[in-house]
Amino acid sequence: MSLDSLLYIAAIVAALAFLILCVSLAMTLFSLKNTLQSVSETMDGLSVQLEGVTKETTELLQKTNTLADDIKQKSDKLNSVVDAVKGVGDSVTGINTSVRRVTNTVVQEADKNSDKVAQVMQWSHVAIEIMDKMKERKRSTRGWKSYEPR
Image 1: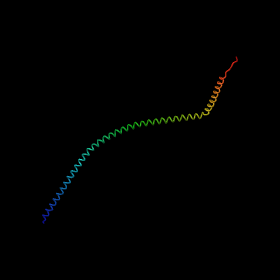
Image 2: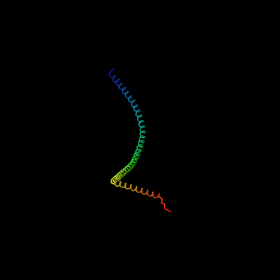
Image 3: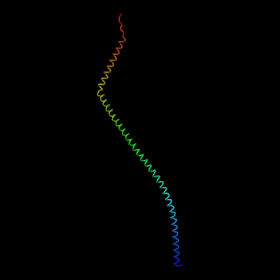
Image 4: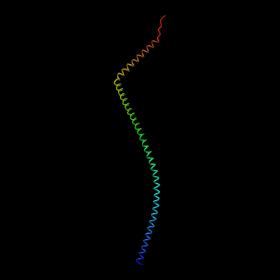
């Protein structure tokens, strides 16, 4: 064989290899085309679903904001109630302090005047006994009838 014939055989082998490469590349590209079309369809579906999710998210955010405003208003009202209850508690504490002060004053005055109170009790007891004796005398004089001679 000559050098020319080897050159032709090498060119044919190279051409066949190039043909096989091109066919393999074409098959790979067609497969890639189908895969990309499937991905494109999936992305279109995701886009539609994403629009629905976005709409629902917007509605949820609006409801959350409304709920947050409602909670804030109720919290403000509750704060005013708590302040009012605190005011009532302060008033009751003030009344308790005043009653304690008056009670202490009464006890101190009673302690100071305990001797006078004891004397008043003794005199009142004596006065009650005198009144009882006077009532008894009045009863005993009523029971007597006096007879005059005829």
